Image 1 (cartoon, rainbow, N blue to C red):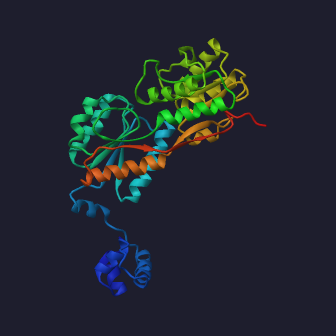
Image 2: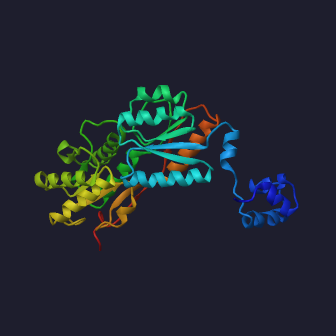
Image 3: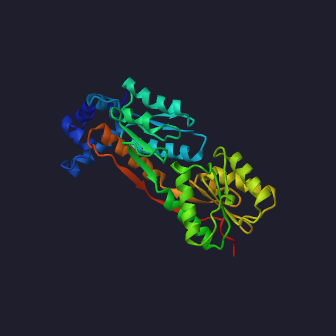
Length: 336
């Protein structure tokens, strides 16, 4: 076992309070005292008892992260960012994989009634506003992404409309005029798909380009296979396209595979753009241009907001927008 504060204090010849102030980074501790105590903390293997600290406050120090699927690179990378942020705050994270199922999303919230978890970060796909309204009054909750609207809960997300508008403007700027939209269902007007379609439509309309339904290719899901199937269908019936925007990177990866199999050059014949900037985007052939949401900021802001909720430091509901940028790679720019 590592040394306690009392052990370190005895070795340093100082009070337990002094050692505690060094551990906490108290500004009143002199540099001389800090230099005396800190090496001993390392040498003696002192580890703060975070669990005891949380239990003294009447909380567990554990939060839940409920995501649709860890098989999706974006969610896996976001989970890693949340774990890093939680570690900095001295809390632990348990993860719930909901598969986007409404029942599982409800269970992710209901399970918190055990008292073992202080709050939840939830990325909902199927949950309804009515499912959440009663829960958020009793359970600290922060929503991630664009799954729900009109709910009295804190919400951290990227500005999807602006992000996709900028991506479409990039495609227009490199000379593309028939830009398809791949992903989701045509009737989707809210949530992630609806907002991303809106950004695509705004950019094309502003440039005087068509946004007709024949440019929109629906998908039943958001996987590589869905993108592969959608791109093949586009090539079969609408060979006049010169670019496609895909709702996420997985769809774009499938589209790139379909184009390669059909002998279509990317980006010379058709440019491809995705959304998420997952690590895999750097290693496709060609590498994928993609919208990059600030995952680290999403994680840090959502964890901090949840801790504020848990600690009773805030009552006002906030919608927090996180930054993004477009990472331009080989799939949209013809090499000179």
